[in-house]
Amino acid sequence: MCHPNVAAFLKAIAAAEGGGYDFKYGALKGRSNDRWRFTDTSTHPGPGIDGKSTAAGMYQITRPTWQHHGGKLGLDDFSPRTQDLIAVEILRSLGVMEPIKAGQIASVMPKVARTWAALPKGPGQGNHYPHQRYMKFDDFLSAYLSEGGQAV
Image: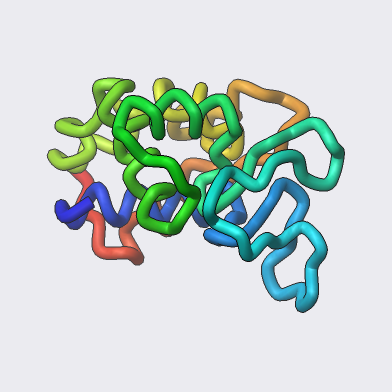
């Protein structure tokens, strides 16, 4: 998280996923008193608006992903720090940390788009989940660059 490209990449994922640290699936930015927000970060908050998807938090981490990666890292809450650490661990497990640090953003998109449905597979491409909305690559790259990331 300390590397500026990794930090910018995480912020761009969050922009694509539309999350906030306190968002369950279905929460909307700007909506006050949204019932799909949560305040208890002692554990994963569980299902959101559809009652099925457990995607939650800044990076829309599902309960099974939280259990797997959180358990591996010895994390037992769903605090903002935990969410950040799990997102970094996902990137590490996908083998994309070094390319991200090197600014090779387009090259990592096919892998990260399998994990985050709102990410494109690359320039001029859609996402892996056709029924899910996604951020176009140019918009993702722009978000990444605006957060201080560097691309080659």
